[in-house]
Length: 307
Image (cartoon, rainbow, N blue to C red; front, top):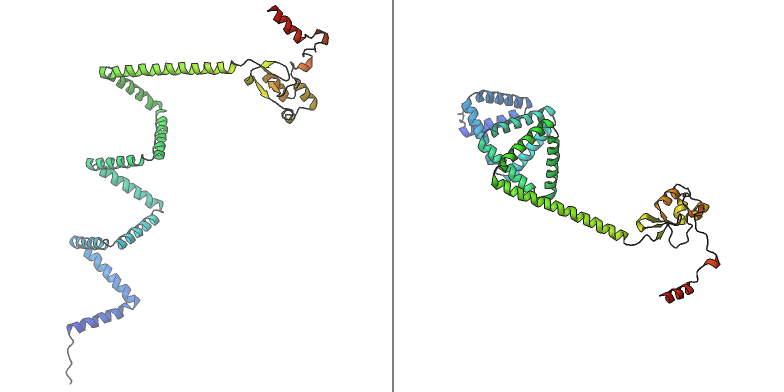
């Protein structure tokens, strides 16, 4: 018989790998292999030391892989997408919120952590308040919250008592009471000056308005008025208000370049009524006869001779 040549260890390993590749091509074999490996891993993980070594090995592999920026970014994106999809479930989202709240409460029991968190929040608030719009919105929000909070009598009454007691105790200190008196006196002086100044302004405004005599004539009643007591009217304005031609002619009885109406006549005119004091109601002065008219030239000469 011919002598069979023994296979080397490397050759046997190559053949085993080849058989393994061929076997894995069968889906059933692959499935059984995965199940067997998973079962073996579960049994192995029951050993705490093995489980810890596996976790350490996986953590080390992840740390090394995350040194690649692209891998780290892909991992963050994948985790963010998974979290976003999971949060669509209200129960999961609520559990996550509860878990985070519990973790934060537990962490705040550490005074150092709580202090660091307060400092971080204060720094973030200071940075945000550099924006004038944000600062204004924050002030308005705080003012609304404080008004709503103080609207509750249960809260406001003890707060008033507490403030009164605090002020009373502070006023017993001369170093606080003396500046407070000076401040109150200055505020009262400033208030009196403002009141006096406002009165003087109103008085000056009044004198400016009445400086000119009431020389504006109402075209309807013929009365003399101040400028502010009359308004300019035209035929078109009265017609737009529904007055007919006859009423317009009676309302604009006085012949002048710029027709004006006083407040009473204007109210009646806009109501399409003839005012009771209208000159066309027989209240106009009759024309002076020629024989009774004064000769202005002769009157001026006579006045000069008298002087």
